[in-house]
Length: 382
Image (cartoon, rainbow, N blue to C red):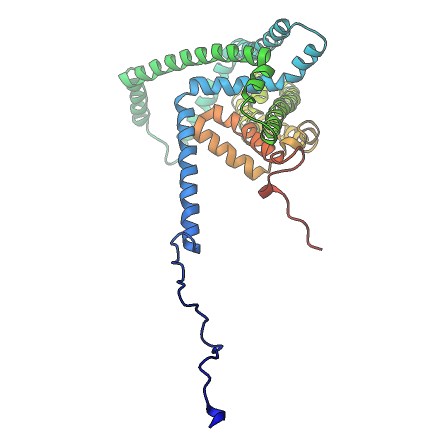
């Protein structure tokens, strides 16, 4: 019957159309989702290995890398001064000498101020600390779980044996070695800083020679942003730290806390470690007040420190630091933790300015006011 006749030339819609003589290309193991994930994982592993190698090299050459970074930071901080003297036709060597001597005098003056103030008041503080320790021991003896006199004698003997042991002697030798490394690093810092101040623009122009076109423009933006962020950080932090130190110094003098001047200098230095530095400086000032005076005086010192820190965070930092150094507190804590783990105290001091510099470079990666594509904010949905 014609109605049920099957036309073999027609194509069924349920069967795929396959041309004769062609083959389906084989499926690559790297083209599916899992393959792309594997490629990305390999890329991440390579990046982590390179970063680990760089960090290891930096840690192995801290005698060179730390003076190099510090010299770059100091040179960035005094770049406006050098630029002003160059614009007013001051000879390059004379401008460099003036700036370098100013930096050395500032560093040496802070060091001398701390040593002089501590030496001047050390005897008084030592006697007060000794009396405070005796009061603490007397209070401990009133507790039900206080150690016996024989236990205290055993602990004293153990401490004496440690001081006279070879282990303590090796530690003292290590301290002498660390002091020698510090002196070497300081001399190297002065030498590198001299060349950065004198020939910084020419050195940067030499480094830009391999770049051309848009890459040269990007490298120039990165250099300018690095100098701007590092200089703004040092100048802003130094201004905030100076105001903090003056405020706490006035409070300590009013409360008649000994070592007020070296404590104020310590506040200035620790201010370069965000968040943690202010806490450490306040705790140390309160401890000195507790040992030298009484717990009421120590509470007043804590109140002064909290008041000064609140004035700093709410009024000074927004005005003096600017938007270029505006980092989230979470980012600062992570940077401080990583810097302390990798470089100790120096790492903690350098962690935040380096992080801010990296973020500043990302902000000008594709243009003067155009961040990298992945760092751009998404357009708001209306």
